[in-house]
Amino acid sequence: MKRALVIGASRGIGRASALRLARDGFDIIASCRSDVKKLETLRDEIKEFGRNCDCLAFDIAGRQEASEALEPYTGELTPDIILYNAGVARDNLMVFMSPAEWDEVIHTNLDGFFNVVNPLLFDMLARKQGRIIVMTSASGQAGQPGQVNYSASKAGLIGAVKALAKEVGKKGILVNAVSPGFIATDMTSEIPEEHVIPQIPLKRVGTPEDIAGVVSFLCGPDSSYIHGQVIAVNGGMVI
Image 1 (tube, rainbow, N blue to C red):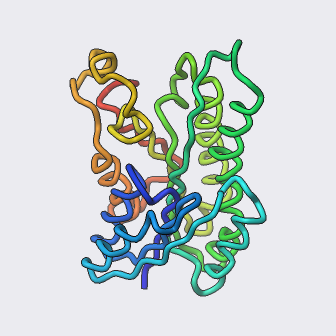
Image 2: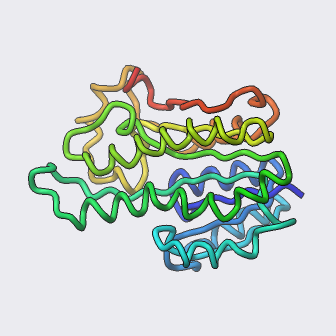
């Protein structure tokens, strides 16, 4: 049975991706940060596709907490897919940025990648197959004022993807990144769309389903020769 671990599955891109992968035939291991009840509706929808859904709540920024939460999914239960879709934003101009605003973003967005992937990687390598997909951002490709912390964390993920791809490709593990632009989610809900759309050649904001479709492709057979790449899904915002 194919399994996909979806980090940050309670809403937005993670939720849409979990549903798409369930429709594609994967059982889902869905995680959120604090309240597992936030995943109950998702679990019910996944069951309608005839797939199972395990629900986890843990803080990916906590190394020990992440390791303990993922320990049941090592060995034979190691997921075939890891979708690392996690991110917090604490926007501020760097001159005014507090150490706490820097630390929270880096610990969650970048350290969390290590905390999630490292405990599962050995067993994926032993199996000699699997996919690791990392959600980065257009801000990590081009930079955004007021997001030095966020841009740094997402650019760091791009570097991690490229390096890890060179390490594990020979063992049959495909590693890629998806880089969303402006997507209509809770994270962007307070940004007026009229300020953003003039920067987007396609003249619309993206949807979580736009990203989920690319995730589905990267988890499927048609992407078997795509490795170490950053797939931008931004309507032309960053070219």
